[in-house]
Image (cartoon, rainbow, N blue to C red; front, side, top):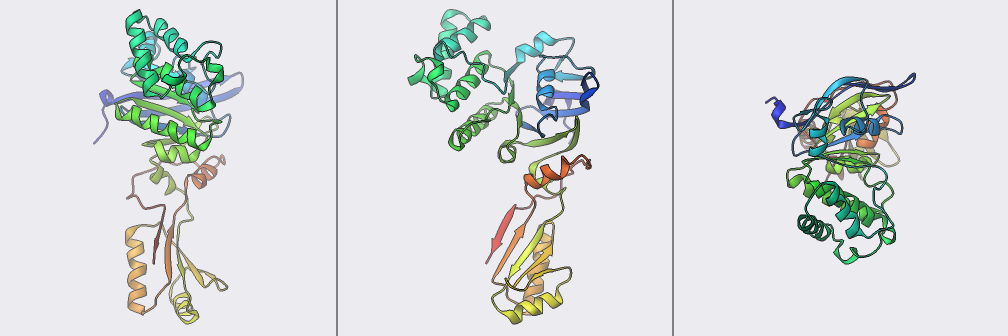
Length: 329
């Protein structure tokens, strides 16, 4: 089924942006279904923040078109702004005032009444576990607390689309995982999240769809599993303790890579269920018993390094997903 325009929170076609003779975005196309997490990956300088700044009306594109929440990015910029929230790379929190005062300031900017502003502030501070620190200067907050306050401030206007530009950069692992949970909860409430990140695990954990940006161009798009299948290197690994069984398998199986010291064989494989069943059937019919069979497929690190080398351009299709690693004993 093709996703129709009314189901898309973000649609961008042919977006271009250059600064002098440097092209930052070279005609990129993006579609983000409503109520999903879309992650834009890319090395430093790839154009991720520029894409966010254009789609959130902070800067104008040199070419291309976009619709955000059904509104034309150029002709209806004010309506776009009313529909979105933006949390940038650098915190917008004012450290000289308290967390509560930061929230109330945002409520004023959204023209909420005094009573409504206090109600929304109290609800969001509680939701983001900041009530106890609400009366303290934001400068005393930890990095994770400031990030939570930053997103809480973004939610004051009840946006249906949120742009998160590298929201967990600099956070410790626990704070990062807490932020992931917050993002998941936002999406469960129907919010659409456009996420840029340099943490590949973050995109793998959160995103429904991932796009890889390199040199101003989108070099791949798809789910995490689809992108992993674009990169060769998957294999099935058989480990033996019996040298005789090892030699029988090494002689009979084709295209294997041997490790005689470890008594292991590697067989090229995409990790599909059919391929795995074929290997297991052969082992059974030959009366050969491996002590361990494991399936290894490329991870997003492999995808990132392969696709951002400046030589690959690919579009992911939708093959049947396979586990990243599975061990059968």
